[in-house]
Length: 163
Ligand code: GDP
Ligand code: MG
Image (cartoon, rainbow, N blue to C red; front, side):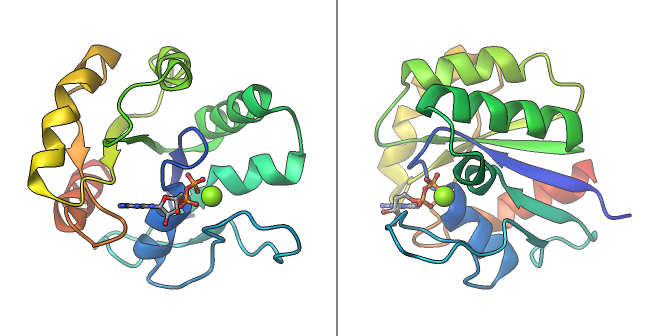
C-alpha cells in the first residue's frame, strides 16, 4: 500500500492548492463556495518518484462539519493517526497565528515526520517571514508557492528523501 502524506494546516493557507499541484489535477476545491460539489480529498501524488497518496485534510474537516477550531484539531488527529508523513502548511505572507501555534504543538507529538511548508512565498522576499515560523520548533521550513509552482521541486525532493 502506498504511503500516505497528509496536508495539514488552518483554513486558507493553501492546502487544496498544494494538493492540486501535487496531484497535477484540478480535483480539490480551492474556494469553499456554497453549492460547489466536493471532490476527492485523496489522490496519487504525481510529483514524487516514489508512489504515495496525498490527503487534503481540509476536505475531511468540511465533511465532518464541526466548529472551526475543532475541525482543525480533528483534521490534525486524523493526519497523526493515519499519515506516514505530514506536510504542515502555514501562510508565509500572513505570518504566524495562534491556530498555527496550537497545531504545531499537537504535531510535535506526531510519530510520523512533520515538514513545515511556508506557502504563498510567491516571491523570494516573502521567504524572509520564515524567521517567525522557526519558533514552531519544526525546523526552518520549505518555502513554496502553490499559485506559481515555486519550490515544488525542492518539496518533491524532500518527500522522496523521506519516502
Ligand atoms: P485551504 O483552505 O488551506 O485549502 O486553502 P486554499 O487552497 O483554498 O487557498 C486559499 C486561498 O489562498 C485561495 O484564494 C488561493 O487561491 C490562495 N492561495 C493558495 N496558494 C497560494 C499561493 O501560493 N500564493 C498566493 N498568493 N495565494 C495562494
Ligand atoms: Mg481546502
